[in-house]
Length: 307
Image (cartoon, rainbow, N blue to C red; front, top):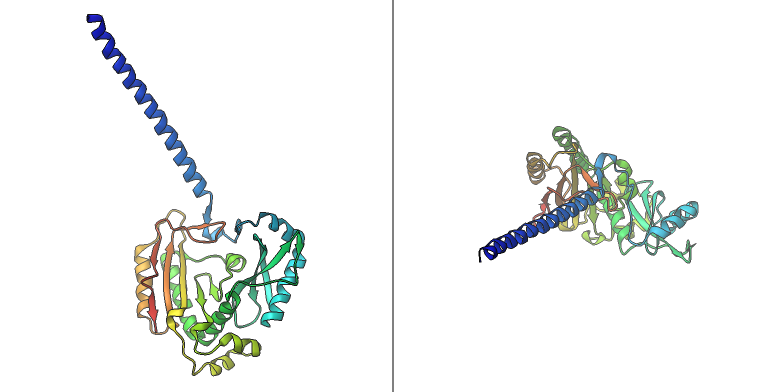
């Protein structure tokens, strides 16, 4: 009986120790997996000051990337001719990115109204379909509308620009690089600190239709033509997209509050529906979007409406 009493506790102890060993191994494995996931996640980002669009990608575009590179001049020419023919707009091509249907051509208007946008050059059986270039629904039209809006409210946008230059310097904040703006922007009138999204329907008259009839109009002519037009400010979206300069700094709460308050109170900024995003220093390479870690945000459903 004494022998049995000794054996049973020893067996229980052995099982307990064995169980601890298994748990330790599982914990180490989970920890290693988590670290690997964090490392992989971190590799998707880079400092916004160094980002020019490298690594930007679109779904299913790997193969068409190679075809676009091999037929670079042909794709560029197809994109330029599309904008000249359909939108009466001379553009500069900044970047070609493969997509599932072909190649996305990122462009910038050469003259005013100033805007960034893109079109798609289809690729079929490895052939460039240069006569079938198309744009996504209202993408170019809305970009044109945003450029015209910036022309009409040029003084107000200059005031906004001057303020952002001052406040970003004060708090060591930055925007995206000019290269990234051109290579992967594609969303209307913008600068490194903000981008706009304005639907043609925001105006009481069809500004894009006017533009296609009078693509040569200067700023003064646009101001005169739209002097009696009205706009729905809730459809005039102005999105501030800001980043901390230091690689290890979280978004600055004080700076964020000051910027939001200034936009709320300013009387000389352009009318519109404002959103404010303040990121850390990181931007995602394949999407061109700022990291959402520690993000400070004032946006939907609480945008800042300026009449």
